[in-house]
Image 1 (cartoon, rainbow, N blue to C red):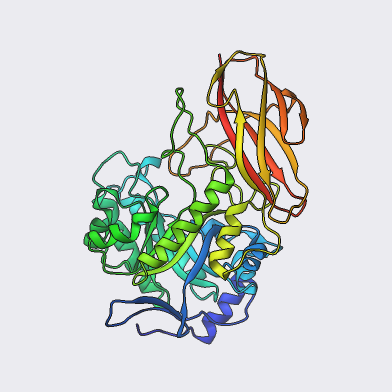
Image 2 (image 1 turned 180 degrees about the horizontal axis):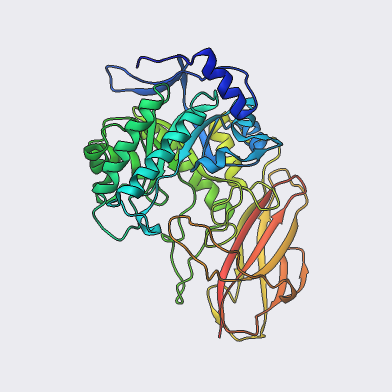
Length: 431
């Protein structure tokens, strides 16, 4: 594509807005050769996004081999990281940013038939691009996230048509960075719909968990003929795993999740090699979603779990010098069972450490979340009951069932004193 370099005045304005100026915006374009092979070029150099969704711990991310961050909204770009504006800190570390611009969801009450709401959103998008387009950390624009999903209507063509209008606005404001939109999986022939209603979109982002291994094949089957990124992947989602009799989803251990991360990334790259231009693991940080450990590649206290090691291996070809502990089994007669209130229960975990570091074990009983949302919406952290842990010896624990009837989980956190951890939990129900 033909690119327009920023004027001296625009650079001065950019410095005034963001507080730091080291260079002008990088030139990012999509290369497509006669064999159908796509790649991103940054200032003429090939760039594959080894990424994660992130907004913290960027230095560790870079240290482990990541080179690109995905965000979801402009508010993230306005965060302070290590005392510096988000984009400045990312650029300082040599990280590229897929700058997310939130596109409203019908499930949140947005009406795409309301001209005033639509006009307001268009103005917001235009202002965001104008503000950040000249920053050298920007790789491309991520226009929306799963706005076609979970709505009151099964027909989301109106939403996609508006996404196309928003893409036109982005391109009028910035000719130097491609535009991507992100959808929730490829069911219901979604790629066909995006191709039909969003011709202005340059890259298709796909969020997929259990179905992630088939993304390259499904895109091919649906006739998608542009590049794609796997924009969210990781463990099996809580909507995809087996359930207990009372409906509680059974979470994988951190070791099982790590295998998923590795396998999915490799499949996306190998099977989608002609069109895949990047992957973004979910989530580089801590997130309460269904549980406190389901998607986070880091704990709230900052320790990394094995998923981070797996991604470091695929990014660099080697594991970190000190690897995270691994969990092989969590056993209890209370696991996945209904048990009496105030009863005494036991549990044990089998874990080890690749470097044979000594391990510490922390157990806690937590109420099953009562604030479960759709699509990753923010959830409240459920209450925990540390007083119910009666005793523990090494990897074994004795705990008391709560007095109040309801659904709970027992969590174990295994740490190695090297800022790494392993996690596992099981649900149980108190009669």
